[in-house]
Amino acid sequence: MLNLLEGYKGSVEINGNAYSDLKAAVQSLKGFEGELTIVLNKGAKIKESASVANTNYTENKVQEIQGSPIYKIKVRQYMTKPASPEFDFHNKWNNGSPMPMRIMVGRKLKETQGMVQMELWGEITEEVTHSCMKCGKRLTNPVSKFFGIGPECGGHNYTNPFETEEELKGAVNDMQEQLKEIKWTGWIIKSAIEEEVYLEDRRLD
Image (cartoon, rainbow, N blue to C red; front, side):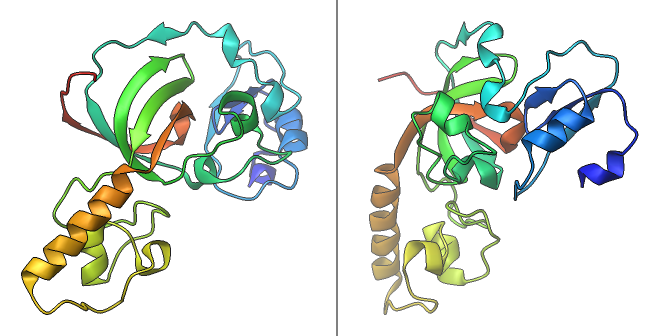
């Protein structure tokens, strides 16, 4: 992908990390597998970063967010992957803990120019869900759409095993309670957020 930019001489931002030139980005991301979000910033004065790990996010002012409303967010897949030599963001900012699911619900705690810290949990927010909350893939199975999570990620049947609608709703409620136990607090690269939906205002506990 980066080969298509051969000859570009300006600065570049990839997955929220700034590089002074394309050569530095290529060296840092050598062997990286996954999605790339590329922003060209020709002429911008950005300090060269030798690797993702060395990007100095602390230079940005951290702003506390009070009384944040509840959002549902969907992140790019790399935010759910373990740290690697090519992408050690989680080791540096999240104690080595990646996000457990791609789609989660929660509130914003702090933010900088390039990152946001969020308190997140699993929650079914619609009667019918169209994407698996764990892996982000589109759901096609009718039962999965009620559970908000696919058969492979959720370990449930492809066909409806319940004889009545009440039994199905009871199983969905059980799944909802299991999802709410999946909690995560950490920093997210803003450019990694694919979707952000405002849900409601709730008081902080």
